[in-house]
Length: 451
Image: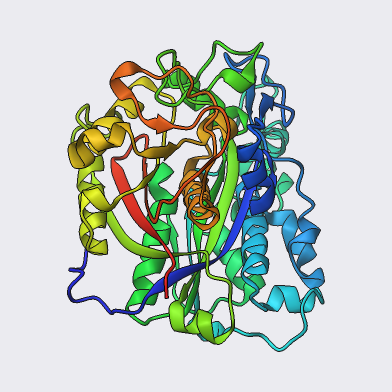
């Protein structure tokens, strides 16, 4: 990480929030869902999940992709996997929320031209996960590549089976295609990067965008991530790894219990979050609404094990310390915690100990937020949704209640609100994310905007 004393002093602010979650499309439905404790976790409808230990998840309402792209781009939605669609929808919501006049919104006649952002100074950093192939489509093609005994024949696959897949089939499942479609739709011609570091991807993507603008390489960036784990492979993988909460088929809304005494594991979900980061002077010049300011970013690696977190949370603590140093603040300046809170035994304990190592006993009483009890775990999209919620909390001077945190693990007690939203004077929030395997950790410091 670059030394904060040598980085460009441009201030970076948040001017747009775009979220696609199980409680609705857009930041307002998400915020309202949290305030009213409306769960987005229910029996899965996308496929028959009855053969899995858990048949529920955080499923996003159906998306009409034509609503999020220019009319001339609608054919391209046919080669968008679910993850790509989530990112494209989140990007549309973000630029619209920010009041940006991008190519997409102008072409759709939703705003008058000309554009109010220089495309050559408009970048994108988007986190992506392991995109699941369309199993029905793939199975149909595989069925045409069997021999007379009903066994798979690699030669027939090459001569016949592959012919039953669209020529552009692979382009539906490449992780960089989230950023590819988003940058084409909104004409983002500056730095564009895809971050594939599992569940930490969104935080890392936002941190990279923060750096890009701070050093003067761009004026505006779309950043965040998206992923769907609501598919047979995504859910089965978590079941086989022993991470899936599987004791709540009769009450799925109670399944994910972040930092809870009775937590049993995570709930698979899907969703995306993209935020607009912008150079402060650029935002002022166009009269943008400013939600908050990004003040610091830190990242680290967990060298304990590639599959399990450090029991003491040392990687988490390191990322937090680096973010606080970058923001030039002390642990005592943190007034709000946006936790990652997956609901697994090991990861929640590791996260708590990492927080406690830096913040001390204050971490037990600081106002805290955990949203996976409402949404489930959205993989590479989780962190950006967390950041959006932290920003809304600062902007609205409100801490929303955190679903299913009413029975805390006494050893991992944090200051969650359980009954209803409370007023908050918090000026500085800390939000962190980490990969469930792979070892990446990242933290961001978000500050209430002041002139």
